[in-house]
Amino acid sequence: MAEKSMWLGSDHYLCDPSLAQSFHMARVLGMPLLIEGEPGTGKTELPIQYAQSLGLELFVYPVGSKSNVDQFVARFDHVKYLRDSQIEILNAQREEKGLTSALSTGGRNTDHLDDYVNMGPAAKAYTAPNSVLLIDEIDKAPREFPNDLLYALSHRKFIMPESGRVVEVNEEDMPAIVITSNREQELPTAFKGRCIYHYIDFPNPETMLQIVDKHYPEADNKVVDIACDIFYKLRNLGLERAPTTRELLNWIKYMKSFATDEAIPKIEKLEGLGVLIKTQSDLEKIQRKIFQGSEDFLKRSTHN
Image 1 (cartoon, rainbow, N blue to C red):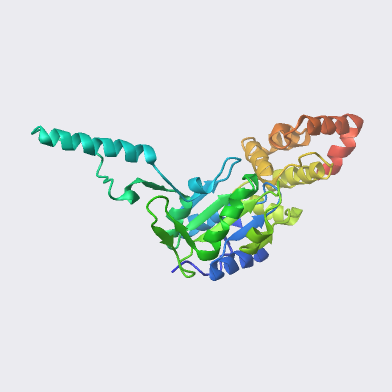
Image 2 (tube, helix red, strand yellow; image 1 turned 135 degrees about the horizontal axis):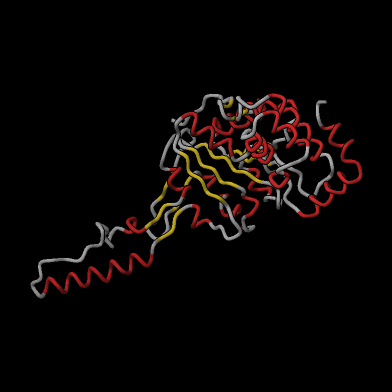
């Protein structure tokens, strides 16, 4: 039976109560959890940390622009099947000539088509009760990909190619499925209807301090406070791509390599800005802001 207890986070992951409720509901009902939100809000980390904290098997499918159901579920290895068929013919010919040695097919038998089915993360998760399946960034996929998943999500089963074997799971043993989206494109309404939906809001400053503490409990409080303060100042500048939680954590991780009296001046001078800002236009905007009144901006950003 799949794990159905309420999961409230771990030592390394702060799970908001509303997110915990949605995740619990999805697992109890045997439905996927679709999480949307801007990048860096912890969507991908939820199933990873959940599986890690409970010691569950994790299967991951990172979605791309060329993703298809065969990659996700299973594909038939026609090349290997053809090669083994040729080997079987050669072995029959060798036997007719009285040769006792035989060429190996690695234990595969062309009469058993399942021997040539390469199971993808979805089929593996469906055959591993109490597992976790992450479908990461589904909004990057071609339009037909989420539509092609509707049957499997509705009926909780996949049909293996060529062999026709059915991989099926009941509601009780359904793996915990988490699907993430950055909303680069709208998902089909019918697909959303097969999921429990949750939108992760960007953390407020108080929550962000708790998140940082989960990752770097030994970090100097003053360094963290000043870094977070400047981080939110930057996010409020109306940038083309505002810095995310992941990038703040990387910035703090870098600053942790310095003593406190070294780190604070570096943060106040926006050293290591490349870890937070990712476009030329945003860098230029911040540089103009600093040039026009950097002292006021940075002083308001620190706790002096």
